[in-house]
Length: 393
Length: 131
Image (cartoon, rainbow over all chains, first blue to last red):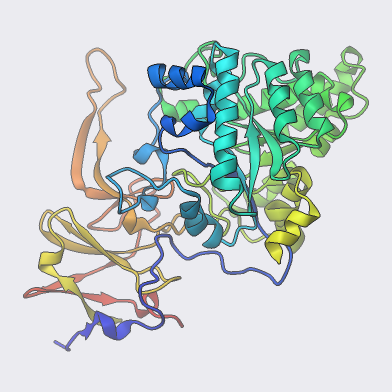
């Protein structure tokens, strides 16, 4: 037998720089913003991390009762739903490093992301289902302040979708006014599963506040609540079924916003639906347009085709991206979606079903690529030229 | 192909693994000890290029029918023989590289030669060395 080589003999290049992840994003062109990620979850290690940001009354509530967030109890992936390759070897099995430094190392630096929109921990979206509106608002405020201190004031690439609970619109408006003056507030985060549809007039004060500050609404699945079953026919049994309701939920919320005239009332309001897949948007536009021609007399406040409101005002997150059997079908889908206007790139880092920017879509023409991976998001989010200058310098 | 000593038998106990990624940007390989036999897989998932060999090694659930009062007991089989990619959770048979959720997908495997205390692999050099 030929004498085998020693491992050392085949090293070329720098040792000890082995990545946790597979080959990264390297095709970074010469200048400008190239990659905006509209769904990055920042997560606190334990609920007690929020104590310094709560008034005494609610500190007692948290210590005594916990977060009290409703949870229907679906099994997610092992490792607390995160990518198991991100497990920190320093920590106990199935624990993670929740720090900004970790997100910088594993996401922002590794994949050359210019801006990352923080979308919080999904279990917290269940603030929409808390019976006590003041506790829900206090929790959102505490989480937003924790994010400011630990994430926003450290890295200019990290921008925030401030979390508000929709069920008491006056309290949501108060939080929007409180944080809108911060430049790193670039969107307002709200759950997708709510006790009433977002076109309803009860929510209009929230949309008015967003429009006043030129902040888009980013609505992320899901927002569990004892008062809102995830389907009109109740609770699915299994997590895989539960995931399948997302497109219908996004579709119902988008139809409500369009039909109830929200975009006539607030012409600069933008709304993004995140982590609900994408294809739902095409049949919604077609179906609403067809029905508008027949039923338009019932909603005469709609002056344009419903699809025109959609394309101007509503954006769709790219994760989890459909994987149809033929690559050609991806291109057809992108065309049907008007993806160069409507699709915004999302990783969903650090969750197991994340999409990386390299393999998420087949090769696109340069214009479509730029729109999906950067420009649609820059048009959507309240990101200023100064902020762009700070990150691309 | 190059013949390389990738480790010692004692380094990788039953259920253990060793991942060799010489430097950034290369897939590398993962070496696994499944019930006393050694296997090597390319550390890159054929689905979306995730770092497959860093995933969870486990078994899989199995049943003959949907749950009911009289049937459909969910059992667990092949403990320690299956790896689940940390990105998107596709399952692969460590011994053969066969993907268990798509019959058309397979991850590259490398035969392991046990020579005394040495674990030796014939690797595709491109998995280690920049062109």
